[in-house]
Image (tube, rainbow, N blue to C red; front, top):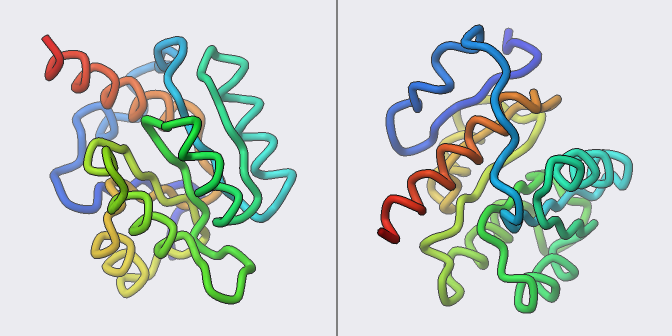
Length: 160
Protein backbone atom coordinates (compact mmCIF):
# COMPACT_ATOMS: atom_id res chain seq x y z
CA UNK A 1 0.00 0.00 0.00
CA UNK A 2 1.29 3.48 -0.92
CA UNK A 3 1.28 6.06 1.90
CA UNK A 4 -1.13 8.98 1.40
CA UNK A 5 1.67 11.32 0.33
CA UNK A 6 4.94 10.14 -1.12
CA UNK A 7 7.68 11.83 -3.04
CA UNK A 8 9.93 9.96 -5.37
CA UNK A 9 12.95 11.28 -7.21
CA UNK A 10 12.80 9.76 -10.65
CA UNK A 11 16.36 9.88 -11.97
CA UNK A 12 18.65 10.82 -9.12
CA UNK A 13 19.04 10.00 -5.44
CA UNK A 14 16.40 11.48 -3.15
CA UNK A 15 17.40 15.00 -2.07
CA UNK A 16 18.47 15.19 1.57
CA UNK A 17 15.66 17.65 2.29
CA UNK A 18 13.13 14.98 1.37
CA UNK A 19 14.63 12.15 3.38
CA UNK A 20 13.84 13.75 6.74
CA UNK A 21 10.24 15.01 6.69
CA UNK A 22 10.43 15.85 10.41
CA UNK A 23 13.18 18.41 9.85
CA UNK A 24 10.66 21.19 10.43
CA UNK A 25 8.67 23.44 8.16
CA UNK A 26 10.22 24.39 4.86
CA UNK A 27 10.50 28.01 3.93
CA UNK A 28 8.34 29.10 1.01
CA UNK A 29 10.01 29.09 -2.40
CA UNK A 30 11.76 32.30 -3.45
CA UNK A 31 9.40 35.09 -4.49
CA UNK A 32 8.81 35.28 -8.20
CA UNK A 33 9.60 31.64 -9.00
CA UNK A 34 7.49 30.95 -12.11
CA UNK A 35 5.39 27.81 -11.66
CA UNK A 36 2.94 26.31 -14.15
CA UNK A 37 0.25 24.14 -12.50
CA UNK A 38 -1.78 21.84 -14.73
CA UNK A 39 -4.66 19.70 -13.50
CA UNK A 40 -8.00 18.94 -15.13
CA UNK A 41 -9.63 19.07 -11.69
CA UNK A 42 -10.36 22.77 -11.42
CA UNK A 43 -10.49 22.75 -7.60
CA UNK A 44 -7.14 20.96 -7.34
CA UNK A 45 -5.49 23.25 -9.89
CA UNK A 46 -6.85 26.41 -8.28
CA UNK A 47 -5.93 25.25 -4.76
CA UNK A 48 -2.33 24.54 -5.72
CA UNK A 49 -2.10 27.78 -7.68
CA UNK A 50 -3.54 29.77 -4.76
CA UNK A 51 -1.11 28.15 -2.30
CA UNK A 52 1.92 28.94 -4.46
CA UNK A 53 0.67 32.45 -5.20
CA UNK A 54 0.13 33.08 -1.47
CA UNK A 55 3.81 32.33 -0.76
CA UNK A 56 5.05 34.63 -3.52
CA UNK A 57 5.42 32.43 -6.58
CA UNK A 58 4.35 33.72 -9.98
CA UNK A 59 1.75 31.13 -10.97
CA UNK A 60 -0.19 30.19 -14.07
CA UNK A 61 -2.91 27.56 -13.78
CA UNK A 62 -4.16 25.57 -16.77
CA UNK A 63 -6.88 22.93 -16.89
CA UNK A 64 -5.63 21.09 -19.97
CA UNK A 65 -2.48 20.46 -21.96
CA UNK A 66 -3.28 22.74 -24.89
CA UNK A 67 -3.96 25.70 -22.60
CA UNK A 68 -0.77 24.90 -20.66
CA UNK A 69 1.34 24.91 -23.83
CA UNK A 70 -0.18 28.17 -25.05
CA UNK A 71 0.41 29.86 -21.69
CA UNK A 72 3.93 28.39 -21.31
CA UNK A 73 5.17 30.16 -24.44
CA UNK A 74 4.51 33.57 -22.92
CA UNK A 75 4.93 32.71 -19.21
CA UNK A 76 8.19 30.74 -19.54
CA UNK A 77 7.83 28.67 -16.36
CA UNK A 78 10.82 27.55 -14.33
CA UNK A 79 8.92 24.68 -12.69
CA UNK A 80 5.82 22.76 -13.73
CA UNK A 81 3.52 20.67 -11.55
CA UNK A 82 1.58 18.43 -13.91
CA UNK A 83 -1.27 16.02 -13.26
CA UNK A 84 -0.70 12.81 -15.21
CA UNK A 85 -4.30 11.74 -15.82
CA UNK A 86 -5.65 14.59 -17.91
CA UNK A 87 -9.05 13.93 -19.47
CA UNK A 88 -8.06 14.76 -23.01
CA UNK A 89 -8.21 12.31 -25.90
CA UNK A 90 -4.67 12.88 -27.20
CA UNK A 91 -2.90 14.35 -24.16
CA UNK A 92 -1.83 13.28 -20.72
CA UNK A 93 0.71 14.73 -18.29
CA UNK A 94 3.50 12.56 -19.68
CA UNK A 95 3.02 13.80 -23.23
CA UNK A 96 2.77 17.37 -21.91
CA UNK A 97 6.02 16.94 -19.94
CA UNK A 98 7.80 15.53 -22.97
CA UNK A 99 6.57 18.41 -25.14
CA UNK A 100 7.66 21.01 -22.58
CA UNK A 101 11.05 19.31 -22.20
CA UNK A 102 11.61 19.38 -26.00
CA UNK A 103 10.95 23.11 -26.32
CA UNK A 104 13.78 25.67 -26.17
CA UNK A 105 14.88 25.98 -22.53
CA UNK A 106 12.96 22.84 -21.59
CA UNK A 107 16.09 21.10 -20.36
CA UNK A 108 16.23 23.61 -17.48
CA UNK A 109 12.64 23.07 -16.31
CA UNK A 110 11.83 21.30 -13.07
CA UNK A 111 9.05 18.89 -14.04
CA UNK A 112 7.02 17.47 -11.17
CA UNK A 113 4.39 14.78 -11.71
CA UNK A 114 1.41 15.03 -9.38
CA UNK A 115 -0.84 12.01 -9.57
CA UNK A 116 -2.67 9.22 -7.82
CA UNK A 117 -0.61 6.76 -9.88
CA UNK A 118 2.25 5.22 -7.95
CA UNK A 119 2.81 1.81 -9.51
CA UNK A 120 6.19 0.87 -10.97
CA UNK A 121 5.08 1.06 -14.64
CA UNK A 122 3.64 4.55 -14.14
CA UNK A 123 6.79 5.75 -12.34
CA UNK A 124 8.99 4.32 -15.10
CA UNK A 125 6.86 6.02 -17.77
CA UNK A 126 7.06 9.36 -15.93
CA UNK A 127 10.86 9.10 -15.67
CA UNK A 128 11.14 8.15 -19.35
CA UNK A 129 9.13 11.21 -20.44
CA UNK A 130 11.31 13.69 -18.58
CA UNK A 131 9.84 14.21 -15.12
CA UNK A 132 12.29 15.02 -12.34
CA UNK A 133 10.05 14.11 -9.41
CA UNK A 134 6.82 12.31 -8.63
CA UNK A 135 4.39 13.33 -5.88
CA UNK A 136 1.45 11.15 -5.00
CA UNK A 137 -1.74 13.11 -4.30
CA UNK A 138 -2.48 14.78 -2.01
CA UNK A 139 0.69 16.84 -2.12
CA UNK A 140 2.28 17.96 1.13
CA UNK A 141 2.97 21.70 0.74
CA UNK A 142 6.09 21.45 2.92
CA UNK A 143 7.59 18.79 0.63
CA UNK A 144 6.76 20.87 -2.43
CA UNK A 145 8.35 23.96 -0.84
CA UNK A 146 11.51 21.99 -0.04
CA UNK A 147 11.78 20.75 -3.63
CA UNK A 148 11.17 24.21 -5.12
CA UNK A 149 13.72 25.77 -2.76
CA UNK A 150 16.33 23.14 -3.62
CA UNK A 151 15.68 23.74 -7.32
CA UNK A 152 15.95 27.54 -6.92
CA UNK A 153 19.15 27.19 -4.87
CA UNK A 154 20.70 24.91 -7.50
CA UNK A 155 19.78 27.31 -10.32
CA UNK A 156 21.17 30.25 -8.35
CA UNK A 157 24.46 28.36 -7.80
CA UNK A 158 24.72 27.48 -11.50
CA UNK A 159 24.20 31.11 -12.51
CA UNK A 160 27.03 32.46 -10.32
